[in-house]
Length: 326
Image 1 (cartoon, rainbow, N blue to C red):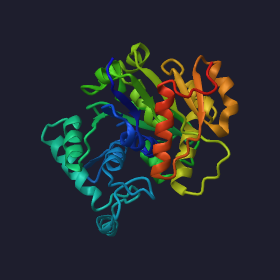
Image 2 (cartoon, rainbow, N blue to C red; image 1 turned 90 degrees about the vertical axis):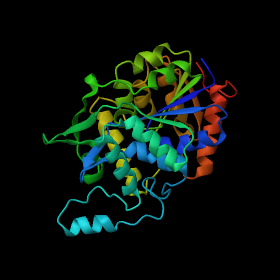
Image 3 (cartoon, rainbow, N blue to C red; image 1 turned 30 degrees about the vertical axis):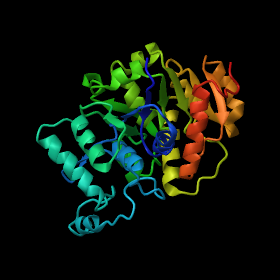
């Protein structure tokens, strides 16, 4: 075990905390990012979670939307729409440079890890960012009507408004963790899960052969951060859609959309679960799963919120302030 922190998951919620950790942590960081959201679109390989993390860490992210690049334009999308192409998944003009470079490298025989490393270097990201795997793994959702669709179509095109009958990670059985993933988990003093959708963003990472075993056996403390906060009105349409997605995917597993519901998915790998102070009443249920808990404000609306949450999580990991510990 060395002074290394490994962060696993992906998406907007994780990126907000991870940027805070990157700002204050003294240790080297390794980010293991979900790739089961990835898709081919307009001939390009799109990696939503990887791109969100890269843009956030490099300071390029549109912080108001939480995705894409700041000061973006969408002229290419407008032209594609005029040509009769589908434009439900918006790709900005600056964003397209990322997808063009990545796709070119993949089609020339380079791995997703190599393409990600090249993009990170080009964006000035000095931490190690790894895709969870170099193989193609895809989350598919079957809705109550019987239709099966890519997760991004469920989330973005349909607004996560369908009842979910099943979700699966196609290709996961034949995939291997990317080089460096298992080693990072094994060598870390701390591993952090999320805060991400437990089924769509953390679930695929944990489903990769060897990852759960590595988290079970590592000497690192494994901390998960809740993506769910009860009783908070959600005005932003994107945030509302992501909340509906979490709720629908948890429901198809027979779980409540709650901190305890999320914690139950990590009970075999998690040492400590961070709960928002609004959900402090759930700590007893989580403790009964054999998981210690810490309560703190977890909502991140500004970069400073991300730094504050990061500082609290790192303090908890160091044993400086563990609340409701059992």
